[in-house]
Image 1 (cartoon, rainbow, N blue to C red):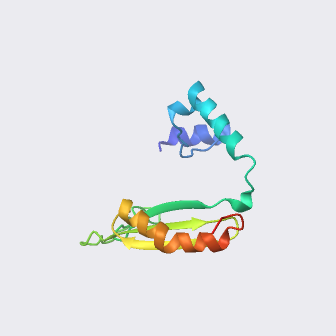
Image 2: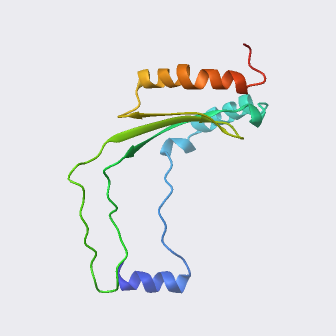
Length: 134
C-alpha cells in the first residue's frame, strides 16, 4: 500500500478489509421470492431438530506465504518438494454436538458421500432424532 493511501485511511478513520462477495443473482426478484418461500417452509422447524452436513478439503503440502520479520529484513524459508496429499473431511452437526465425522484421502465424490451417509451418519441420526421414525 502506498504512503498516500495510509494517510488517507488514517485521516478518514477507516481501514481496508477483504470484501464479502455475494452472487449478483442474490438481489434479483426471482431469488428473493425463492428465499421467502424457503423461510416460510422452514420457520416452523425446531432448531433442535436441524442437522447440518458440511465438507472441506485440506492440502497437506501448503506453505504459508507470509511471515514476520524485523523491519528491513526479509524472511527466507523452504517449501516442500512434495506437494502433499489432499484430505477431505465430512461431518454432520446439530446445535449440541458433532453427530458423525469421516475423513478420506483425496476428494469427496458421490460414492464417498454414500459411504458417509450409510455407514457413519444414518445410525447416529436415528439415535439422535426424537421425531424420526424407525
